[in-house]
Image (tube, rainbow, N blue to C red; front, side, top):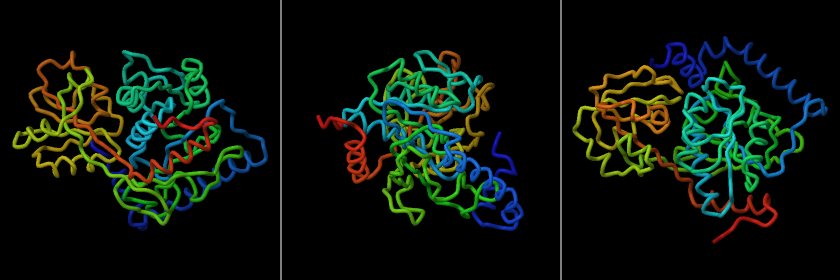
Length: 351
């Protein structure tokens, strides 16, 4: 269940801009032509963004896979909460059974029905969340269910031009722009400098998720670290992760499993905490049914995987949830406050 050889080969091509990347340039040119056609349709008014009654902040990136959008979304929601802004989240809900269905998340929802990342956001941030391939429909459903919301945050959706946005937060990790080419010759989802759809604001904040800039774009930096560990059953009850529990796992024979776009980053952070483990890299959004490890293993997993494992069905299986903490630098919050004063008629609360 590890990443396929083709995926590994493409990652190397995007990093090194090697012969395979050059062979794929015609397909990248076709991709660029399709994007150009969509831009033209919006510029001519043949396609239009749909209006929404509250501002939309889109958290997205230009490169495919694992730049840190969901941790950034959680950090953004925490900032909005501290500023007194009532925010809700819309997401596609990738990997769920009925991706075309619009759904406002409710207590008891399962990851396979609403998506692992949206369920994680709801549990961690305690905010209303709606999912749908059509993010406009998801936004309208969420606002109908929660009319007091002041801001909508879109977890991904930068390339979903039908969705208006008053602010974009562009997230980059250590890969930066890779070789700078469009998919599949490079990792770029869109051409650099692609303007937002007509009627949307061009304002954007750039956030680097690995502690230092990785492109020439001016922006802010954030730092990642492991917040600690907690038993799976306790995690579902809302108990916080603690560093002492993580450190207590040192010296134990562990299996570390991660269904992430870039699981090695999680494994490296575990190693930095002094843990010894066998690494099991799973596909992004892996279902975990059946379990990919033996019930006799003592396992550490990410929160993104924890939302797919109900403890009552795993009697006798020793599973620890390890949380990732991501904090932007203080200057990012100051810039965000300035943007919110622009977006909200009465400004955010400072209580």
